[in-house]
Image 1 (cartoon, rainbow, N blue to C red):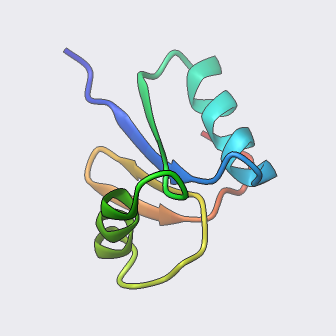
Image 2: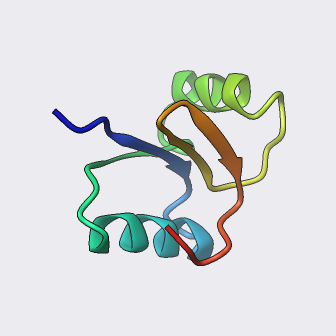
Length: 72
């Protein structure tokens, strides 16, 4: 079974939307976490990002990427 891509972000962020769409377009399973709707999820995101509050935070196969450059 393919591992999910975790994307932490905000619904109002165009880079979060672009990341979600790019990974889905490439056939990946995406779990999207809106950090504005759940403080616990924000805490989880901050652990992945070493405290950085920039979104999106993409966790793909154990690799953490902060931001999205338009490629998946």
